[in-house]
Length: 130
Image (cartoon, rainbow, N blue to C red; front, side, top):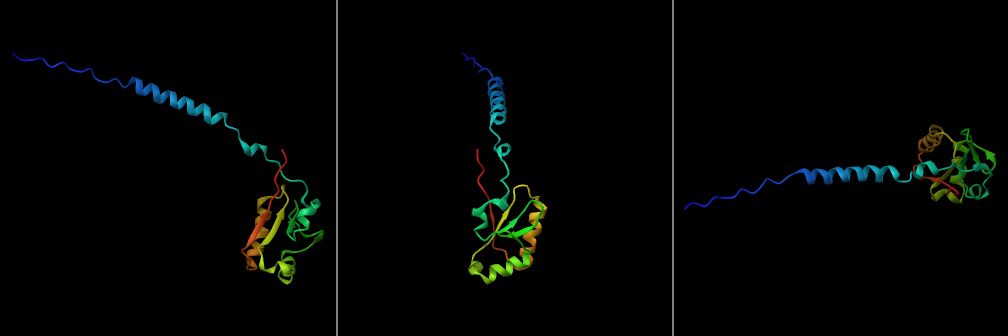
């Protein structure tokens, strides 16, 4: 006698589809609920009035793109000559830019420093208050 082979029912893919769909929904909600830290950023106060930054010997760039050494307005070339003559000659150049300064104005200052042959530039930032 021949034995009849019982066919096993085909596996259903519906449970797999349900799991994938639930994971999709979960990640959509989890991604949209996350806090966006970029919206919390506030620009620093007027950088010319910050005594701790002025005392670092940094080149200060105000909101209009004017450059200052301490409280005195200087050109980038004059400030660079002053830095090379002083004791800061061996360290990196420090730039402190106002928070409302446009990026292209800051880029111009950096390009002026690079044109003078200096690439060791550090941008001083300030931690915002909450």
